[in-house]
Image 1 (cartoon, rainbow, N blue to C red):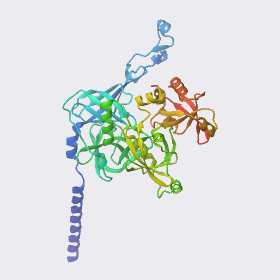
Image 2: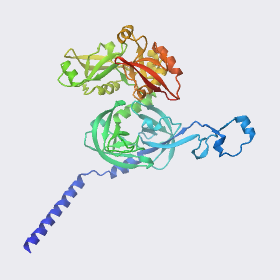
Image 3: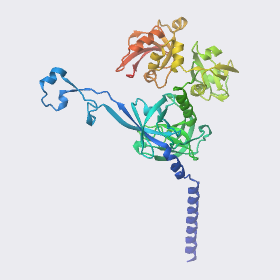
Image 4: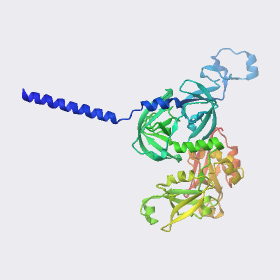
Length: 477
């Protein structure tokens, strides 16, 4: 019996140790209950109404019943659909969608959300935690950062505390509150997986990557640290299934608040512009330039009238730092330049002929800034903004070098514009649009103004020594 007693005692000891370990682990895990109780009143659900164009109905839509000849006399074979026709049928005049989340940043009713949540909305409705529904005004939206600022007519609203996203560390706990699939005030939690992520079409946002469960409807909602402070706006997920797959991205709150302040004060966002074409620095290129590591952004070409050219930068220079902050990869340069206020100087550290140099550049205004672009290009901005590009005249020497007779060179491409969707890149030469030759930027403006919005048109490009066509489709707006 003694061996059995000893064995039972050993098992009892092991069970006690396991329970003690589980208790210790449980004590180390974060408790989000207080955070949720305090923060939930400041999180809102956002729905929008879009007026949908009605269409005419054929008489066959009426189930084949006899239609009086007088109706055919006036309307022919088509019958106008009544506005707001019920049942979601052909006469439908509006569409209501519950699209996302947002959060209150001021007691007098300013609300932050994603720009894509309210894009194209004719009416925006905000539902508060106390079930009140308020119509919101869109103060402004910035597609480059996907941030929108709304305003509701209310006072003494519950607000959230803003944190400092620059102090975030990989591995720390975070939580999200939002309305996935329309389920209001749902809470999910996880950790920060990475910081300063640059996504392919979002060069101006150093995204926070997390493993917090985010799904459709969470967009625009807040991401919290353990102190209950907002550190980000949940914006995107990486998915192959349409749902959450363990990778989500948030806009840092420091970036979002800077955009919100500009939208509130000026109604638009200004961001810095350097006027260069860049490419990554490979290991072989780094070795050829006498560099120890493959970092920085290699300037492949410059806008001859841009800030970089005026400051003396040259093709072949490698930008290593901006105001003392390292350019680890070429894709980081647009973000670092974009956050410099236009008109201010930025100190660039470059590598030229194997030596480091410091060059001060007076940063310009990003060409999609309406006032600056109109002044700089004499009204061309409307047409080029429709494409989402900035172009320059092709000089004679460049025409001879490329062996082409006409065209305009693409200097900048808005990553969210129609040109980017078509695959047009900086450095491409636009030779023709919709079978019409393009001789100069002014002609491009005229051609773009006449382009249809309901079908794709062919664009002939000259890229890297060869000619190719891409299909360009513009929105109806």
